Image (tube, protein in one colour):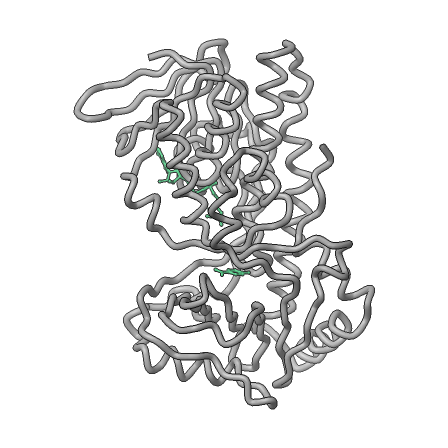
Length: 392
Ligand code: APR
Ligand code: PHB
């Protein structure tokens, strides 16, 4: 098999890259380890920044997002039993977010892929990449009982944090920056009408909690928990009791309960590898970087990488200009590090750290009071949350 760009991984990064290249007439093949159902049903985060919304629109895959997604113009920070609104729209020059599950974005992109007729090999095993230093790299795998070899010009490593692309880069060629947090998030989806129109991020003495949603009938909730938490220890009753405690307010606002249809634990880490490229391999999305979910940046960063990579590949194929491919890693890393800082900062401001001291608790509270009372402070939260504009 021959193609121009071989893409490893059919998450948001791989699927969107495949679609943007297809729209520009660039042939590509996607190789994915799991089946279609797994990709479409895996519950992940759900906040789309303005730039992500614009990119999906430009790619012609934003129609259902606008129809079913929930536009939000603010978020709330809860501490000392009070909710404080951050007006995202007013503080960011009119930008906003849409709450729309990542797996819904994935479904829309898979539908576009099916329509394009370009190859997507589901359930590929033994995926490996070769010849990154040369002019003709290859991707090999086992698919439907057959050995497949895909010869290509470039490989896009969109296979997430646990994929094979980043580890295929020779040791010593990458620098890794890593931070593991001493807690995780326990997340649930509940069939309950959201009791607020906006997301609520809570700092409570028992730990962080987040109120979010997926639709007018489904609430998404998270609790800070131990990093090695056993989900078996969390009965539905215990989860609701803890959520009510951490999200309790003086004005009597309460989370609505309903049947819990999904439960999971999300580890919290920050991770960046530099550069995001080696020879003919370009890393995009979680394969190159991870952020803790507090800033809602994960999928948005993946989309931003792919936007840069698609433009660089299009420049290569249409005008033989490789300047953007050469600059790919540096261009992406500027936004990546902004998001790394923001996600780390929001995480630090909102969670309980085991090593915290009474002094640090007071400092944390003072910071929350500042960002919710000063316009300058609110702007820092808002303009990063909605995402900085793309430079092109
Ligand atoms: N071969 C083929 N596919 C693979 C392999 C492999 N060896 N390893 C992993 N994959 C696939 C996974 O099954 C998954 O479908 O790569 C895909 C990677 O998708 P994501 O993990 O969703 O990563 P990405 O597309 O970069 O999207 C980033 O995901 O983790 C969230 O918060 C993050 O929202 C962000 C988004
Ligand atoms: C979610 O709805 O899943 C969500 C929202 C905001 C976050 C993280 C996750 O910061």
